[in-house]
Length: 364
Image 1 (spheres, rainbow, N blue to C red):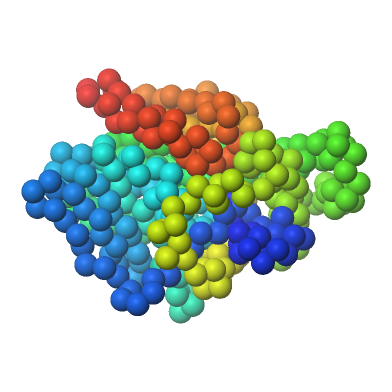
Image 2 (image 1 turned 90 degrees about the vertical axis):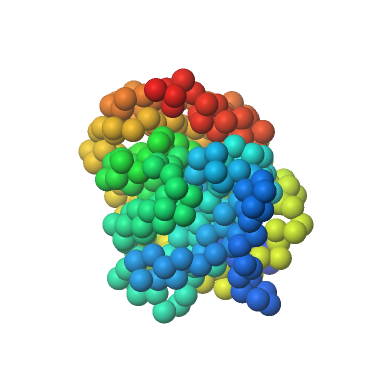
């Protein structure tokens, strides 16, 4: 499990001990009243703002499509982190500028937010199934908007999913953008733990040291005890600025959420989906090692990396970037970010995505 997690629900309820333990932001949603609005498409300007249900791999899932010109703009599919964390209301608060250059698709993956259903078989919660869900969704979008390829962005957990899709189905992908790219989770987790212990020693934080030092011999691992250890590591990683640069918590990120987006939020329902997804997918995430599984891609690759990211370690991403073979690749540093670059430096993220779209390589 990588980021934005159940800890938001815990934050709201001020359960500090459990709070720190959760991975990443929890922004999962449910609709009140009429569950889904009809697509709103302006036939004169080809703008769209549509919350829709699609069936992927036999499971109904939710997408939000927004944009100002569906005819001329390319498709941008955003793959959220977690696993099981919907970033919809964050992207809709911080990154609506993307709508001017792309037809933007936010998708709650199976088991997440508006796509959570307790009847989803646990056996279907696999990386391979999510790759196939993504491929099916891309096919739907290409047909709907008469496009040959799409831009694919994966954040955190979504970057493992995204780069896997780019490897398996390169014919679908105009360019792949990894944001906080997962590379080798076991190595990254160990680096993150070492960083948290180093910072605790520097600040003479006895409580942190008492909780972190016992993890060193066994971390990371799977199972219930492994997840508990993960939650402890993330608690202190957050506290020492390895998730949001220069911050002890997510308070400032929450302050930037547009009030209107909160109407889609239901913390109790979404907490179930978060934990459902984490428990099912953490082993796949932990065992990821792109040095072994994806040494080469045949599509253009852009890695957006926070200089202070210890959630998916920045130096490890840079090492993988140098190792990876691709027809075109760029490593883009966000100097004032840790792990959540689109929301720590939103203006820069929006501008970088515009530059990716308009890069000379894309015109070839």
